Structures are given as structure tokens and as C-alpha cells.
Length: 178
Length: 255
Image (cartoon, rainbow over all chains, first blue to last red):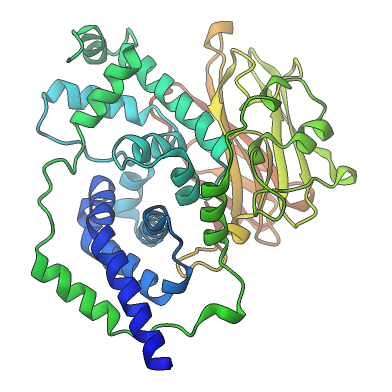
């Protein structure tokens, strides 16, 4: 029986791992590319240890674990003066493939969001989570996610259109891509 | 429509868009190494983790936002009873908190130029969580979107503690803080942009909370409560770092 149980658990872990490795890898890459290998490994190690706790919505659960692993890593890093300032105002590194002025304006707009609002927005837009999954990943209510998402979108729009952001203003006034 | 453009822009700059898939061999090697670690015993005799409860909650929630948001000027007790933050939760859920009315109290008052006195209300819940909310001078609650000064932040109401949410997580970090934040934009009244950090210091012996970036401080009140307003000349740059200090000035908690 014990052997059967271990086999079942390993099979379940393998399924979760294969289905969600890329999701978690991309989630971490978007935020902490330099930590991706460590955070991914630690996240799935937690998943293996707690394989019986993994719910049906495994992606949201895994992102919640990965988020905690990232924060733990960051908190450890914060003890080092050299990196603390950089981490305090961290904004995800943006894809360099687009126009440079777009990336600059977008980075500025993202910095204008509170960390929580930014996180909700990026989980929705980049990671493709629905509101229930975001609530699960962040450990908050769905109503809270709805309000944060609404405000984050509004503020992103507002800051891209802000008159004192020349680059942002140019982008906001540019024709929309069809 | 502008939002569509902003979100489209954000999608175009996804840092992972060009990330190649993981090398299959390396991925399999990692899986083997992890699975070779001894798993924990079956959790049959221990409770479900808070994270799992939260996940289950997230899946089970029914969209219900709306009704209590209309209650922008409720009394503190009525607000906590309505618990906008827990809207849509079910009895037994971690986020389904019930305020203990006798514990509702004003924990702090903050004066913000061109805004006036903002009150921080606090209460405890039956399941050892806590309630928090910031009230503007006209009685409207921050985080409900019912006042032009309200620039976003945490929806008011009652919450489980940080420890209740993450306490059983292997990577949960005790830092001595359990707090939320709301933004006030007083530019329309000739003032500035403020972020109010409010909540509880959970490490014993704290008497003061200090933001190391601005140097601003707030007194820690009964039950570890605090509220600290931080001015941000540029609303798009919001650096802050809170520490809790004891009576001798020693840092005993870091947010």
C-alpha cells in the first residue's frame, strides 16, 4: 500500500510538474530572471513535499508558492545593503523587443502602481490568471482582486496619458494597433 | 478604449514572450532530483494549509461585489460587519471573518494637509483575524472608490492574519508586520499624493514604526496598531521601508 501511495503521489507530482513547469518558469522569469532556476526548483520541491495539498487549480497554487519563494529570497537579499535599494523599487524587466520609448514609458507607468496593484495586473495580463486564481495565488478575496485590477488598469491608462510623461503621452496618442 | 491600448502595450512587452521552452533533458533531470527527495508523511491528520483554503475559496467564490461598496459612509462597526474585503466568501472560509463589535475602536488619527484628519479604525474578529479601515473626514472609507481623494489600495474590512494565511507555508517569513495600504490623492485640493500604511506590528515590544526612506514615524498603539502617512512628491515613485523599533531604538521588525 505504501509503495502504491508513493507511486500515486509521484505520478501526480510528475503530471503537475510537466503541466506547469513552463507556467512557473515564465512567471519567475518575468519578475526575477536572475533567480529563475533557484525559484523554480524550490517551488517544485515544495510541491513535491506537499503534493497531497495541491488543489485542482494547481497553477494558482504553484504561483502562490513561487511568489513566497521569491519574497523569501528577496528578504534574505535585503539584508545586504548593496541590493536593498534596487529591490525596494523593483519593477519587472520589460521585454526589449519593442520600441525603446514604449518600454521606458511602460516601465515608468508600472512603477507608478502600488506593488499590490502591479502584481494583480501582471498576473492577469502576463500570466493569464483569472480573478479567482489571482485571489488564490495572492491569498486575498476575489472582490479585492476585482477592485485592485480595475484600479491598476485605470492608473496604468492614466499614467501613460499623463501630460508630464512625454513618452507616455506620445504612446497614448498613437494609433491603436488593430 | 485607452485601457485596451495600455493592456495591449503591456502584452507586447511581456519579458517571457521570447523565452525559449526549458531544455527537456534539464527539465526531466530537475524533476528526478526533486522526486528523489523524501516526501512528507501523508497530511491526513493535519489540517489543510491556509494556502489551500485560500485556493479553494478563490475557486468557490461567487461574484458578488457591488452591494456593500455603495455603503461608503457606514459606521465603523457596520463597515466591519459588512466586510467588503470578504465579499463572496462562505462560512468556514479563511476570509469569511466576523468582527467582534466590542473591539471596534479608533486606533489612530492622521492629519494630511489639504485633506484633514484620516482615522484608522481597528477591530478583532472571532477567528483571531483583524479588521482595518481608513475613514476620510467626510466619513467615506478609503478603498471603496467613493471619494475623489481615494487613489486606490486595500478594500476595507476584516482579514485573517498574515500568519493564518501563510503560517504553515515552508517559506513563510516572520517579519513583525501585518499591514495594508491605501493611497490618497489630494492634488485636486492643492495637496499632494500620500500613501497610508496601516495595520499591526506583531513583534512584542514595538513602540514606534519608522519609514527608513522618508524618516517619518508613527507611534505603535494598543494591540500593536499603527498608521503612517507617507508623502510622495512623485506618485510614480513610491520607495518605502518600514521598521519597528523598541523603546531603546533597536529595530525588532522589518516589513
